[in-house]
Length: 225
Ligand code: NI
Ligand code: MN
Image 1 (cartoon, protein in one colour):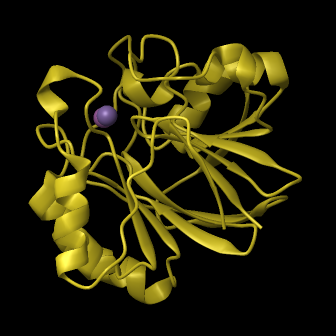
Image 2 (cartoon, rainbow, N blue to C red; image 1 turned 90 degrees about the vertical axis):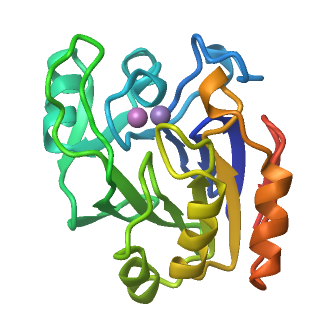
Image 3 (cartoon, rainbow, N blue to C red; image 1 turned 120 degrees about the horizontal axis):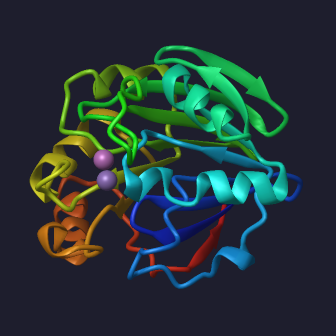
């Protein structure tokens, strides 16, 4: 069993009944976030990269709940310097955590901390949890190796940015769905700021037109798989 909650932007909460894991916890300053920081008590925090709309409240949450932050080496060191527990990984590497296996993938983007330091490469992440395989692409442009990610992992749920400007827009994200061939795609990284306005229903129609499943989640909505 896996419960997946879309917190908004690129932030998702995964819960298998024993473990709570948050990806990219951008709560404070996120105008689309329906939850408060006090509502969240993750054991695990996964960061795709260090930009403020992904690193978000990770340090604060991790210190409060003694959560383990999972990130690529440079970003893991950065949060460890601030007193958090971190598990350092890097792209292409996987590790078996108490919730399941997690592997970082490439993403075409940037990654610097809010104070401008280099934070290693941005990443996507494939997470096996609660009997499901979830691929969160992180912030990225379209890339052909998504085909390989889909070939090596039977993806149940793909979380794909559609907001354009900083990441894939709708049409490139539809192509990404074609490459990865997941059972279900959920759009993310849209309508948070002015430059990433996108219509998730348009994305859904286009994904359905290539014979694939898409679900547009409300901010704060939970689905159980
Ligand atoms: Ni970013
Ligand atoms: Mn972003």
